[in-house]
Image 1 (cartoon, one colour):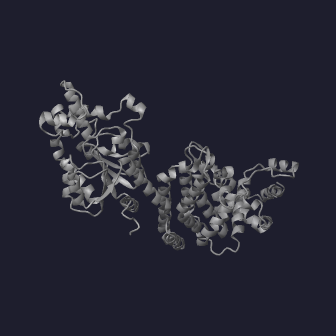
Image 2 (tube, helix red, strand yellow):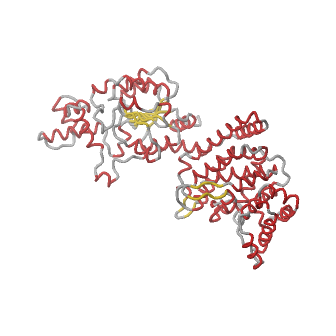
Image 3 (cartoon, one colour):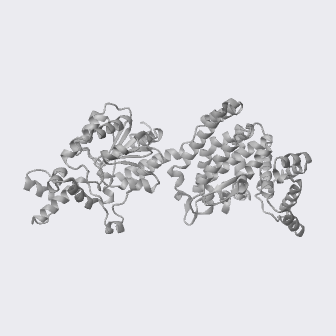
Length: 594
């Protein structure tokens, strides 16, 4: 037995995930049925009922039989609508009443985007689907897309097609084959649906030829022009998947066989598209860049940083990894924070899983940036800062629990830390101080220095001791810093070379960061305050492990060394004034009593 065991839905999810943007979705009236927008058949029977009652017929439960007895024919949507409403404007007015929500509908939540519309919009937002073809007149898909910040290119007539953004340039292209219910040019009758304008036919032929297809909610019976597009398509370069609630209509079966489509039995459109989205998101969430590809990118960075003539290639590699990270973080599974909540608080398991996923997503970029810190020449500084700034700005939006707001910027912390560790390892003190002192612009607020935003306890992601909930960290006062040491001890093998005592190097980074944080203080104020107390530090700085670890003594001795002091002061620390180091160390010494 195969691993899939006939699970066609999972097979489709893999194909959608691995072939981003290749699949187009074709949906019919079955998609909007759960929103209480009737299908064409339901509209047909309701029109029969209304006509019959207007003619004085008694109410009954089988209007299909009544119509057959009266006319000798089966009810047909297009024929009946053409008979009732002679002009396109009249037909539009008839349909309007079935699609436009009334005040009562709005209050009851009817005729709103369904779970299926939302799931399709999520797939579009994540970049897995770019093209949607629909026979529906309603605007529920457009509403769902816009609710997620996606502005689709909507084509509902030949006029709009001529002025629309080209298919290849559109992030989301919605082709409404039958038009929009507010436009009198909608296509309803058999004559209108027998052929499409040539512009539509060429576009449809291209979509069917160049894309895989996911068909749902369309019977395959009524729209002769769309059927013809299926039948004349010469290529099957990508597969077709056809979702059906029961046995497909004989007309649909013909198309399924012609396209060699794979059938998926579904209960309804909502459950089908929600399950498809969830499985694609699971694949996205659990997939990580292979260790080989990460190390290949790191090796490329080392090769390019060694020679000035490879500067362009280095910049492209860095930006490519940055865009990969941003695209990953923009996916719906990183935007949804429901899994992180437990009642009114934070779910420990959810928080830990999200933190690990941020680490997986950031690994390649952080290691490349670490290479640039270790072996760069300063030309990379602006690019690295731009990446940190861009991710931080993206994360610094929206409300919620403070720790979760902070967690959104965790990738910025990882990139910042990797670059800083590379700089410390190389002794590039001037660039390190530039990094600490750089300002991160915050939306509608005054910018703050990197060192006041991303270092240790200064980063708001450490709020509420959430990192103590990780296994083995329950009693750690510096749980976040301890976890960072474990993470970067492994990552840094790619960019720091052989480090006899990695923890000491990490704590040197912490101590210099704390010094940069301290240097903005008024010396006279600090000196006066220190003279009045001997029990606790008078100036808060974001100390981490270095506040308690036995290595602190040797690191203090470093700062007391005249040669080392001169080197870091000349690089910009303490404004070039060694006296600031003395005050800093006096403040720091109180930690042993605190």
